[in-house]
Amino acid sequence: MAGTGSKPKVNRRPEPAAGRARCGLCGKTGKLMKTECCGQWICDDEDEYVIFSYARNSCHRNHRRLTLCGYHHAEEHKGDWRNCKQCREGFETEMYIWYGTNEYNFVKLENPPAYEPTRCSMCHRVIKLAEEAFSTQGGNYFCEECTAQEISRRSTEPRRM
Ligand SMILES: [Zn+2]
Ligand SMILES: [Zn+2]
Ligand SMILES: [Zn+2]
Ligand SMILES: [Zn+2]
Image (cartoon, rainbow, N blue to C red; front, side):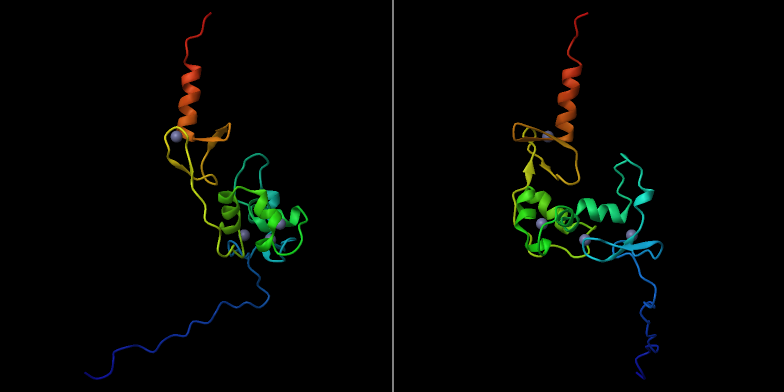
């Protein structure tokens, strides 16, 4: 066998970084700003957000509202959010971890603490608090389906005219 048959490798150059900042979350190069909390480039897109839509399409809003970094800054805690006791105590462990490790973070929480998953008190299914709808009553959690069943059960009870 002569040669290995391999073609000369094309050395891909890294994207030209000069003067072309990108949003640290979605990578877009459009209208950018720096976050107040951690000084990272992020889409300056909060004005596109429709009030009460609860859409998660604004990088800036997501980082500000859905991360410990944003919360820590808004609450004027001291020091680094990753070592912040007030942040840790401010949330249930599951939500604390989610806020610290979701896709809206530039830097994620290292070694997140272990936690017991939350289960529905009726069907005992695990509820992902950050992603699913649920209801609570007296310290119990109910998944979306059980909540809906309960509501429809109540609303279909015969009414007296
Ligand atoms: Zn973005
Ligand atoms: Zn931040
Ligand atoms: Zn904090
Ligand atoms: Zn359930």
